[in-house]
Image (cartoon, rainbow, N blue to C red; front, top):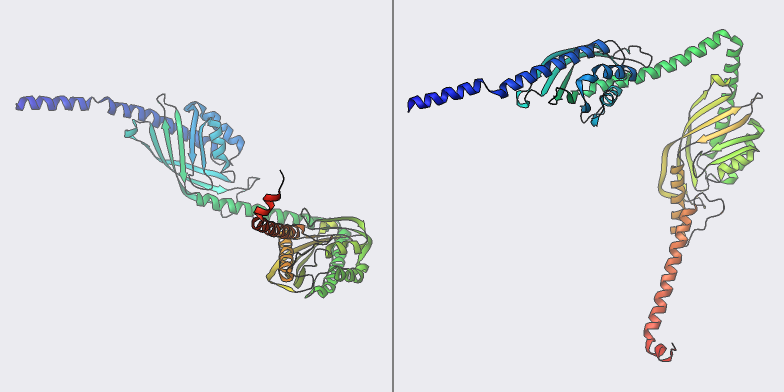
Length: 434
């Protein structure tokens, strides 16, 4: 009995030693291990010290094509802003997608520290632990100060098919570092653009002293004009923005404008005004027709700026206003105050220092919302439908009010008629002819 048991153990031992599974995963794993090692070498050779561009990724995919199956799946930075998740696509598609997330970085060093075979997968799964150094780069390839990252960890996973070709690859890393680098690169490029413009203007100033005096002198003069207009515009504070108020303002300010001007207000909106070569009063009147439901509480000029490239003839202003909705009679609408609404203006001056073009931009939806509230409040207070004039900004609210009242009156009439018919039903039917 004992000898039989011993023989069985010996047989099992031999079978274990000769196990094809163990031999298989080692053999397959070693083959796939070698492939990944070769890929790492190619990656370092192709990418190190170069900015990641579409052309570079295309070159890399071409070099590595033979190691991959015709169709592959790839996953990178799962659940992050840089996530790539493609299924059954070409190798080139994967490389281009993964490379697009790193367009603002350059790999300085790439060092695989561990490449491991997973026995449970039969050697088909290879895991790689790597560390890398990278730096943020601008669109022109400059290293961006403060973006060097040393020893960033990257973990990769490769799945091979039976033919020893990669059919799935995954790369995971802490995307926060890459995201921070991207932000710093974008900020750096923005600052470089500002500096480039400054240098351009400085060069222009050095090359043409007469131009320097012109744009600065002209610009200062035109800024003074705008400041005088803004001081006069303080008259609107605490007042309803009626047509008569704007007509009065246009008369007082006419000396600052050319005889004929063009104006743009609330561009690309339901309130848009586009007038060309018209008297100043026409522009002010058009602006005023939107203000009969608005009262200005405060108007603050935050910035008045000159554009050197225009020779000092273009002035931009940034302003904020506190306003409230009012009824046509001037009554404040409760809870309708808007604080700090931005208003931006653009003025163009002619050679005589007169404004020939002005443009106002602000959020029209806020203004229309105030108008609608004013109309609704007026209707509620009066108890009757509030008819809109031809100058009204929003006909929709009035139309809805009229429709609602018409439906209500019609319903009341039908109820009355039905009740009468119901009470007199037998008499009516008795005398009815069909």
